[in-house]
Length: 403
Image (cartoon, rainbow, N blue to C red; front, top):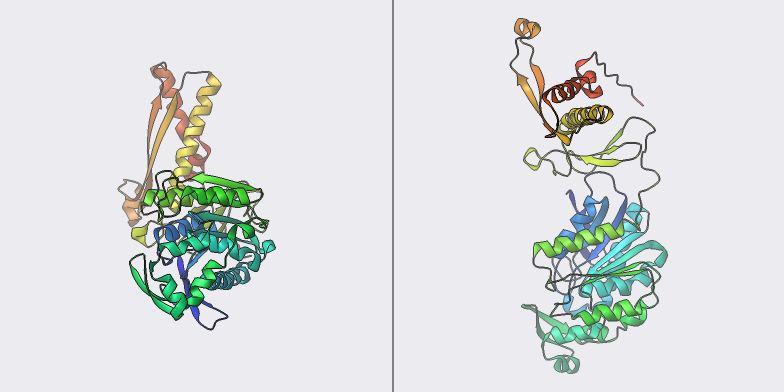
């Protein structure tokens, strides 16, 4: 997916670094992802979820909290309150750019942070909130820190190890974490909520999801990430969580009214990728693209895929319609269409002036053991009579008018 590097200024005077995953086609909404404790925006969950949302037309910003990854500031003196301030700053960036309520997504302590930040961001500016393996008891995270917490309280700061990384934590960091009553804040949320959690999570037990779900108001949903670890290190687990969130979010971030829906024909609009292009019909929309080895994002069929598909689908429909009308026992047809760019042909014009002839090669299999040879032959004759076939082989003019 197209990725844009984002710099977010905070009220504390330092910058946060983020990556905005953009849909290949048009943007229907925006989301903000908060990573897990001491992780960065490059975690598997952050990348998978952000890109899955982008495929659904939802631009997603994943960023590094203060003092982590590419962001400035001192992590050891930040704490949970700073995480919330970072989320508010990042949310403001998205709200200003996309001018519509956003989806909040948080992983682990990032999940607790998006729940706690919702009030500061403003409920009317949030479409929905989803969390992955979030703790219900934020002070409990201190038990995951390898260091002398009491000494830090007494001395003002001290060395610790978190997830294999060394930090110097301050007394303020400890106090800010201990001062959070997350369940009380969750009970006041007025937004749709989705809680995803693994029953085998060894770092943040499933009882945390139970507590959060019980405290939350409806509409609320729970999805079990069965067999997944806390960090979603298995790509399949991260992809599953991402797809669930994307599907759930589509209910709360509907297609915008200003998207083109032509009464006839199609409307095509360029998107954010190098080639990605949004295609709109009266009732459908999808993305056309080019493969990765051609410089595209491979987020949809190529233009020639669509051309060959038009002939193939129209052929299959016409043949089936004919057999149905005759009442013949056709089980189905399989049509394979390929495009040949420089077809060797004995066409007179090609022989005279060297004109290159292009060709569409069509292979058809007719399925139906009860069909006789005459029926199969007559069904096959219908292939050349399908409307798209006639259009392609007929006198076709293409007119271009500026708007």
